[in-house]
Length: 92
Image 1: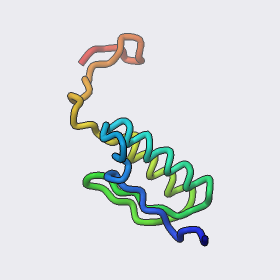
Image 2: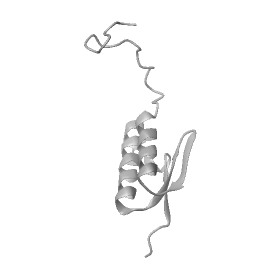
Image 3: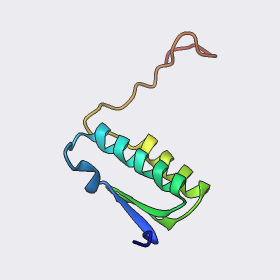
Image 4: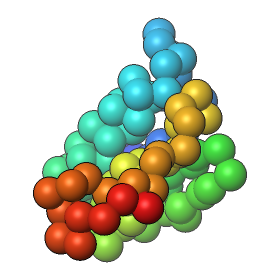
């Protein structure tokens, strides 16, 4: 069968078998990397965000950044305090 012209990587489809946020993000990341490896254009749909279908390193980078920065609604916001060993180690 001919290869698909473009893959649609979707948040809802990534929930198959496991609706956990981290599992979805992990599955989507694997799909992005596989699409890049196969040289297939893909779109990515996350709640509130959509990357239109494209091919290439730039598309892969944008998709991985979106996945890495996805905010988990079940976690509290990160603290703004700095660790003591960081440059300027003051605590805010």
